[in-house]
Image (cartoon, rainbow, N blue to C red):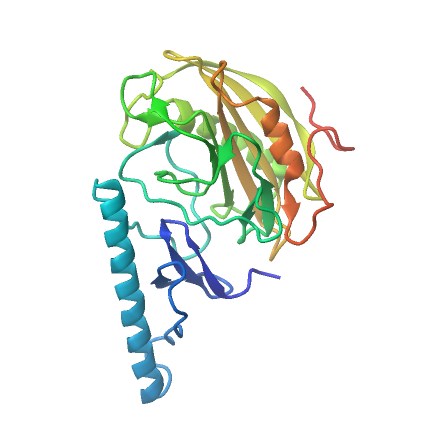
Length: 303
């Protein structure tokens, strides 16, 4: 029921692929599209021939990673670095809705069946890619599913911002399983990360002045019972925006909760607020084009 062993985009190095052994991330990485090489066995195991193959394989992976890093450096010219991914589940979203020249490009690919779909392989779902949205490129934050196209100078006078971002990750830091409890606990952090201070302690929007809850309640997501909380955030500079925390059980493995964060700038330049509901309603399990839910279904959020 868990994602099968295989090469998946590295959550902390999106220009590389990393080996998922069926239960956890390993330390084996390769460049996307590199020739398939055997994954080395655990230290101390296997025959001498197997160990030799393992060393060759590890060398091939290292060379591929170095070559890929060189390509990235020549593309952005700012010295991008490969970050270290965790050894278990993907990490939490980190950082506000800004991008920096040091970020690495994503290798997220369209679905073979539908080019307007973004796949979240570890959580077993797909997200609709609406008009005005693109797969992430040169994004500093982890777990980004999609962004609005292009960047702009942040209202606070430092950094570059994006008008919209969507994040997806698996909740693993506690044993809480209730979508309602997790969504309510996450929304404040989602607002702070998006519109207060970034990881460099910069106030990209001049800081948060106030917030107001504008929507909350149960919602059907990919045929599962989830819960969402949405805030309107007002900032010292710029029009502020909307943040939403959506949680629902994964359709794979132990059905660990999936957390989806939405960050939408307000104002005429921000994405349509209705896109939050459209994206939620369009979330599907892998291989199932019919099972959906979202706002307007038999389970709908209340204001």
